[in-house]
View 1 (spheres, rainbow, N blue to C red):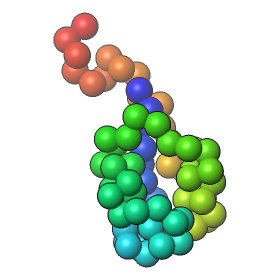
View 2: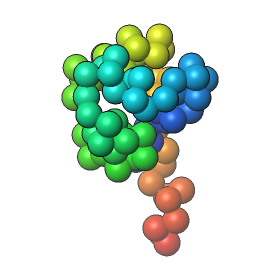
View 3: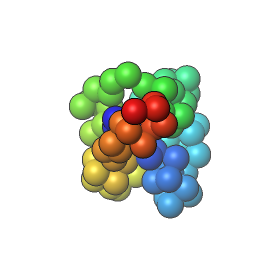
Length: 74
């Protein structure tokens, strides 16, 4: 599973949701969905804008975690 560590990078950059949403050009609701790992997908255009705003690489935000670590009982 892919985990979005947006909250970690935002904390490192001392940037809040409202400021980042303004810089990226997406709604607070959509940014919150990303931040809380509720997103099913993210557009590359959005990822590009987030990386530009935070001065980071996609790998600083996205992380692969083996699905077995989710506690699915297997």
